[in-house]
Image: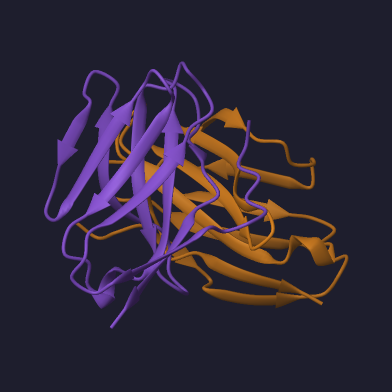
Length: 112
Length: 111
């Protein structure tokens, strides 16, 4: 099976812009989670979608949003970008609750 | 709570020696745990998992130990190789909730 794929891999934006990141889970996986990884804060959970419904949400402002489509693909959007949003954004998928979670390669976002 | 990785502990081992990476998890209700390996520029890679009804689980060159009494998880790597150099994360999970990650440990393998 193909692994989790994320597009784009690298992105440069300026403050105030918005960005959309995409994630395609492993075939058959219905759950997709998003994480933000920075050197100072480690791996921080953003949100999880299961069968198109947001199931869990982390402690991030409303500028961070996501959605999941009927084919389990997911998108994450960040509006009004801030310098502090520069990070590696990781997507992970799993078949269901308490199943093994697998990560994609990430999208590295740089906000100037 | 969420990971607050402010400092990244580092473990340096000689090639061929065994490595032990430790993790203190936060939630006594957690009943599923995963160890991940992350190499520079890549996403975390699944190594091994363990459920709370087990104390020990072995894989290829790796062993995970779980001590629920003190909320402690460890990853043992046998005969450590240069390719094992990476950051290792433990992740804990309660059924129906998201995974929570530890701050990570950097493993450096010395020639």
